[in-house]
Each structure stands twice: as structure tokens, then as C-alpha cells.
Amino acid sequence: MNAILQTRLPIVGQQPLNIGFVITSMPVGGAETLLVNLMRSFDSSRIRPQVICLKDKGVLGEEISGEFPVHSQLIRNRWDAGVLWRLRDLLHREQISGIVTVGAGDKMFWGRLAARSLKLPVVISALHSTGWPDGVGRANRLLTSITDAFVAVAHAHGQFLVEFERFPAEKVHVIPNGIDTRRFHYSAAAREAQRIEWGWDESTPVCGVVAALRPEKNLQLFLKAAALVLRDLPTAGFVIVGSGPEGEGLRNAAQELGIADRVRFLGLRKDTPEILSGLDLFALTSDNEASPVSILEALGVERPVVATQVGSVPETVIENETGFLVPSGQAEPMAAAWLKVLSDPELGRRLGKTGRERVVNHHSLQSMTDGYMDLIESIFTAKTQRTRFLGNMSRPRR
View 1 (cartoon, rainbow, N blue to C red):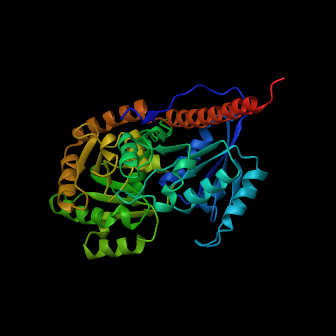
View 2: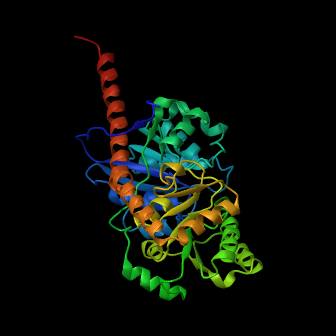
């Protein structure tokens, strides 16, 4: 659809723009990590980012508070309309030129409303996932006219925003997620260290997942597939990295399935590239996604991926090129695909190498950063030039 744009526009010759990224909080998650990487990559002569958390700062918010302004505790409860005035005061005090809301929900609604009330030149909503097939909600859709752009993270995601959310096609811009491929690369030394930590040697075929332990990630499916694989490949090992409300239930499920001794729960970790190097296969079992950063990270480390066929996942997990796709919610096809890769190391190496090449060529951190900078500046320039033009037209002629 030609109305969905890959944004690449000229640099604006002006002072850097103060841009506020409005989000609920900054825990360790895919969208939040992506935002941190994006802000660190901005050209400071063009964009000066700030984080505006409606609730608490979260782990990542605290971590970056020495690098960027991080504001928090702006909303007291879901019915707190006073958040609008607190946001207005903050945007005015910090001389914010534009806002980017990150995700749906309250921040998308109140952030745009506050920006509009101050007539800020730039109002953007970035939707890393709409909770396919759930929508952003009627209240947020009502503010479409005051939004300059909606950012989708993949082409299929952009199509979804037009066809399902009914956002105007000319306002939908595709800026693919990107990762730092200098950080995410394979390391033989890291692989050896991880295998020692897990208590397995090089001969152990290992499948892993990095995800928030939340229901929509369907890690119960991961464990069920693991149990099926162990029937045919009893030497296999499985790694789950992440934290969340499902943690205790997943550990109990591993016990009930009789596979607890073959599963390592690593909790929240920051050494993701090293952990990925220790795997032979990366799995994603989610019931809904847009364009998961975890898949890009795994491919960047040359790990093949088996994933559920949801959202925009098929744009990165290419059948028999970078991995394999299976129907969501089905353990048997998932286990069969895992066995195919884990029992054929040469296949895994081929898929991983192709995956790395794809990420380097299409999903670099720099390309994502350029996309956001160009979009923000183009909207600002168009709005301010129009304001100047209208101001000149309204002046009486002598």
C-alpha cells in the first residue's frame, strides 16, 4: 500500500527539538528497551529526548535518568483527569516541541490531548503492538484528527493500523524495529561460558526464549513443546529468560510435566547477546505480537527462530530461510519444528547466517533512528512553515 511510507526526509537546519516520549512506565521489556536504544542513538544536534512516565520510572527509567530527563508519577489512577494539567505544565516547563506516545492506553490518550491543548507542532503515536487483534480503543481513535502520524513497526502492522484501526493511510508511517548489530553478534567464548553456567556441554541441543513472563507470551506452550521434544531428544535443554507474573506458574508447570531438570529459568538478565550465543535455537510462542525485537536480537546472533505465525512475525522469520513458522497455540507443530532444527546443526547454522544478513540489511538501529528523526523533523518543519505562511497572509498590506 503506497500510502504507508518508509520515511526518509531532509534534515532540518535548526536548533535541536525537545521531544517527549510518553509511556506508562519503563520496566525491562521489548518496547521499553527499544526506546532506550533509540534515544541513545539520536543525533543530539537534531533531537533531545525526554521520557515522560505516567506512573513510576521503572528499572530502565532509573537506569537512564543520568543520561536523559525522566519524569514520572503524573497519574494517580485510571480516572485521574488531573493528569492532563500535570502533563500540560510539564510540556510547557520543559519547552517540548513535540510528543511521541509509546503504545496504546492512557498515555496515548492523555499525551496527545495535552500536546493538542498546547498546540505543539508534533504529535505522533508509536504503536509497537496493538495486542493483535485487539484495538487501541474508541477513545483513542477519537483523537485521530489531532495526531500527525501513527508509527507502525512493520509493513503488515501498518496495513493493520489502516484496515483494522481505521487510521488514515496517509498518516501511517512504517519504521521497522532495529537493533544494534555491533552488540548483537555471535560469540564462541560467550557460548562456552553460558553452557558452563547452565551445566550443559556443547553436545546438548538447547532451545531458549527471552520474554516477559506474561500470559500473551504463552510460555505454557513453550513448556508443553519442550516436553514433547524430550520424548524424542532426551538430551535437549531449554532456557527461559525473563520475569513477570507467570513465573511461579511456569515453574510449577515444568514440575508437573516432569521436565524441571531440563529447564533453566534465568530470570531478568542484561547479557542477552551472550545468552543467545549459548542457544542452538530461539523460540517465540506468543499469541499476539507486532514485530518482536527478541526475534531480531536472536537473528543478529545467528540463531535460527521458530515462531508462531502472528502479527508481522513472517516478515522476519522467513520459512526455511531464517527459521520456521507454526500455528499459534499448538504444541505439536512447535515441537516438530524444534526437533527439525535441533537435530540438524548444519540447518541451524544456515538459517542463522541468513538471519544475521537480513537483520544487518533491513533492521539496523541506525535505520530506525533515522526514520524517527526524519519523521519528527518533517512534521515540525511542515507545521511551522505553514504557521509562518498563515501569519504573513493575515498581516495587513501597506
